[in-house]
Amino acid sequence: MGKTKRLVFLASGRGSNFSASVEYIRKKKLKVDILALVSDNPDAKALTIAQKFGISTKIIPYHTYTSKVDYHRDLLHQVESYQPDLIIACGYMRILKPDFVQRFQNQIINVHPSLLPAFPGLDSQKQALDYGVKIAGCTVHFVWEGVDTGPIILQKAIAIRPEWTEKELSLAILKEEHKILPLAIQLFCEDKIKIKERKVEILK
Image (cartoon, rainbow, N blue to C red):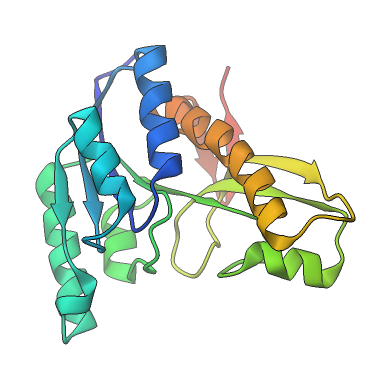
């Protein structure tokens, strides 16, 4: 295995994927250094979770900025200061700007609650139910410019039960997110991911 990978997490909300990922990393004793959890939301539950894990936190409060340009500039500068190998967006509710994505090309991953390229963007579970699909799921992908457009690393499909509400589908998908996001982090940190054009190969 190569050098210890430096990780930064981005989160805006409850932090369940963040928590699942940290627990997995520590259980597997992966060769990583979790540098910080960065949040745009001072009230994010993810911040409390990070503190319980003893992980440094940084709040860049989006609502206090009169200029979105200034917010994204400060976010970039803050994340650059950590010199991360991998940035994990888990429930981060801002679209990363092109200069951020270009600066960390193929070093940012995101978990999304649909089987991309189906149902990108917000309310993916509602989109799936409204469309009447029989199979839903989740995707871990690299973040490229555009919304949920980057190369797909891992996916997990689940069958939709006819009686499920949007909340029930969301919870079922979330359980699978908690499995595939930590695994994708492990694959990256063990140098087992190879990108060719827009396709991801998982190395043995």
